[in-house]
Image 1: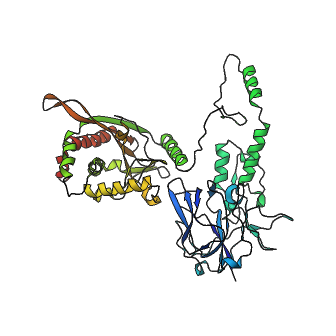
Image 2: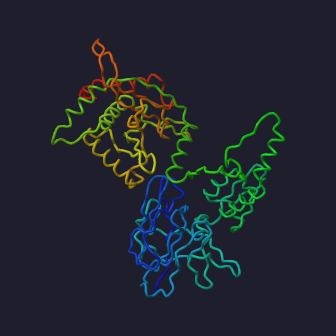
Image 3: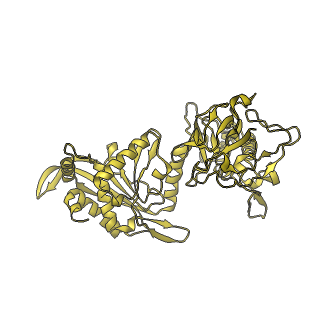
Length: 491
């Protein structure tokens, strides 16, 4: 007898709370094996193929391609132990507005059996089938209510799971506001929607169990607010009549009810783009950064690279040479390989250098991380950076390859610019910037000559060190660029 199992979007690690469905890899009615990838999703960090821990026949899919789904939302249901012919009428794939896309679809609850019996337990970080699943509040549908079109129909008399974005807790956490009224909300997605739209959750009536506020409640409240807002012409007239001598000009679409400007293009801050925007903003809010810079003669560095790249030898990139110089500088100035723990108000100096480097891809800027860079040779650094760059452009970097960096090397010279004041890659404490190398007049050995000159900049967290340390670090880097032989002296 077939047992229907529900597979939800697992915890993808690194505090990620949602992902966007990029491509379905299976169809309804298709037989899948244990650990077979069923969907490709895009998180704020990378593209991930999500494997299903159950083997059997896919009976339903939840969410359309392009839909953003929270962690814990149903992805597929699988009839374990069934053959395709056993399912007379497999449930159709969800359509627009159904399934997990709007957070209101219901799905069959998996029987309380040992999950390890049919699952691998090897899905993703924070998600496994070898441990008992967390108990979730379940409610009976109201009389006459049916699941939304596109989702599987539960057996007669069966209970259905609460919307997945609100699942995972027996009771909702309640945040107490200033006037002592409690707000029932447990979903980070709901809180974020309310915060981004300046919506007071105390004014929202929750339709979930025990008055729990769901995403649909927030969407309804925002829709009602838009309907109550004055039309653009009325709003403009009001502003004109009350502003006096001051002209009030709102940005297109800045307020609810304002019509967009014809021809404008709006790009959602989602996925990697949204994550980058949030990280940049947080860095500027939290880190008191300062920048110092210096010009250096890179002629000898280029000559050293040419000498190393002889036929038959491993290729060494200029970025790898700069990475090797960076790790040597961090060995001398460990204050910059650090982070600030704002919770404990402590500077945390880190033992290993996990060196991030900025890489531009079709999907935006990413920062792959070379683990334990301080222990690698320049040839090893070159090979690893080339591998990570190629993987990044293919969209295949894992979370481990994109996280836990301790210092970032930013080669903005590839864009043809000399200098920059980059934003620190939060929660790191510093970033070394490298501009383009260009022929310029330079005083060399007491005479004016044309040399290959580069501008180096260091943006640093002023909480972890003072200007003397930052200047010493940058001067050492510049000295190594001008005289690469310094690296051969055990540095």
